[in-house]
Structures are given as structure tokens and as C-alpha cells.
Length: 330
Ligand SMILES: Nc1nc2c(ncn2[C@@H]2O[C@H](COP(=O)(O)OP(=O)(O)OP(=O)(O)O)[C@@H](O)[C@H]2O)c(=O)[nH]1
Ligand SMILES: [Mg+2]
Ligand SMILES: [Zn+2]
Image (cartoon, rainbow, N blue to C red):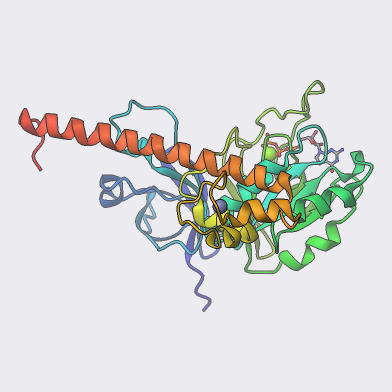
């Protein structure tokens, strides 16, 4: 008998659709998980107790091989521990397809950001440049994107004409999980439909004025295409950089390496003597655009870390107040 682990394929509020052998079962969380604030995400491998009479029970979330997170800046008041952490979106994918359309919505720094977050979570990023049919020079765009980082592959495709799709074949191997991430309207669901050869996901047209999407996909969902698992996701509005240093360093490995060669370990790469970055900018081995992009992303990353620290300090202060007042015991 084949022994594939149970896997979360859809999350709907507090119910989870789990693939269990050949069945799909609705599950809820066991108390211990709820108590620890551990929530499964799409792609998670779980252990369940089957209940033939109603919702089954997720008992355990197995350790994640990879994860894609976004910093959680949303919602609640500062006192909630939950809000200061990164929010896992999908888990256990081998590849993150960074879906970006070759129209006005195209953004190199967005691709760099996604690539950094994917790498930080252990997955391999691949830049998929969609709507090649509306771009006069897809090849030049590919070159720009792959220049972002050594080893970052860029593939331009068109779901309308079929252009470039054969280059995706090497990723679409049975047993492989691929998460499709990117802005709303980039063509994530359309690409899945095209690869499936039928309409599995709903799609809708982008706004004509600014090429923005309409947030058509509202759930993260894993689709099984003959053993290839594609995770469709809703377009992300923004993506910050919390805890992505490792990802940044990998995406900009040349710059990371340069920085280690600066004479001072706390070099700000401005006026310090022996700065390897300024040297490289001068002799042309580092392009100013690339350096600017790295600096921008790194600044953002530090910014979110500062915010996180502020929040942590606030929480610590609260807790002290509360324990002093006898409200909580620690
Ligand atoms: N010209 C062109 N348009 C495309 C292509 N792929 C998708 N589109 C169009 O782009 C629009 C948005 O596509 P969707 O697949 O809904 O986009 P999405 O990324 O799933 O968006 P959300 O679900 O909102 O995150 C639709 O009108 C598609 O027909 C393509 O290859 N070429
Ligand atoms: Mg969609
Ligand atoms: Zn320096």
C-alpha cells in the first residue's frame, strides 16, 4: 500500500480540507494545537484522527520542509503576540513560482523580494514572467530578471499563445509541489488552468487603467495535476521583509560576499576606508542599480525588525505591568 502523508489542500476559516489516501476530509484542529496557536497552512503534512460521522481531527502538524512567510503587520492591537510574527502562507513546496506579468505591473524589486523570502524559507524561487504576448521583448526582460541573482531562472510564458510553457516541464515533475505567488491579476490561476487543460480556478479580467487585478482567488488551494501539486494563492498586496537576511544574502550573494570584504565589519559603505562595495561600484563590477535595489530591500528589512522590536518591548512592558497587578503570573 502506498503511504502518502495526509496533506492540507484548502483552508477555510477554521476548517481544513485534508487529502487522506484517496479521500478528501474536512477537519478541525485538536485542542492542543488550537491552544498553542499553531495553525496548519496549505501544503502542510498532518496527522489526523478520522471521524466517520463528522469533521475529522488534525492532531499534529509535521515539521515543515519549506515555508513561505510574509510579515504579519495586520489587524490586532499591539498587545497580541500573534501579530508581531511572520505569517506562514504555504508550506512544503519545492519551488515558488514568482508570477509577474510583463505589463505595467512588472516590478524587478518585487521579484527580488519574493525570491529572497522564498529562499529564506528553503524553497527554490523561479521567476515566471506571464503575458509574454503583450511584451515586445520578453527575452530582454528575462535577462534583467535573471541578472538579479545568480541561479535565479526567469521563464517568460503566455497562457494565451502557449509560448514558453514547454520550459516549465522540468519543474512539473510528479511528487513536486509548486506554490504560485504574485500580485493579483498576474495570471496565476490562468496559468494553472492552462497547465491543467481545463478550468479548475476562476479568473477575471484586470482593470484597464492600471493593470491591477481584482483579487479573484480568495483561498489558498492545492491542485493535484496527476501528482504535480500546484498551490494557487490570492494576490498579495504587499510583501515586507522580516527575517529575510538569509534570503537576501542568497539572492544578492555577490553583494553579501563583497560586504564581508569591507575593512570594517560595521561598514555603512559610505565614507569608510577600505569599503569593498564602493570599490566595486567604482571599478564597475557592481552595478549601481543592483546596489540600490539591495540597499532598499535591506533598509526595509531593518525597518520591519525595528518595528518588531518595538512591539516586543511593548508586550514585555505590558506583561510586567500585568504581573505586578496580579493579572497574569509568570
Ligand atoms: N494577455 C494575456 N493575458 C493573460 C494571460 N494570462 C492571464 N491573463 C489575463 O489576466 C487576467 C488575470 O488573470 P488571473 O489568472 O485571474 O490572475 P490571478 O493572478 O489568478 O489573480 P488573483 O486571483 O486576483 O490573485 C485575466 O483576464 C486573464 O485572462 C496571458 O498569458 N496573456
Ligand atoms: Mg487567481
Ligand atoms: Zn563597505
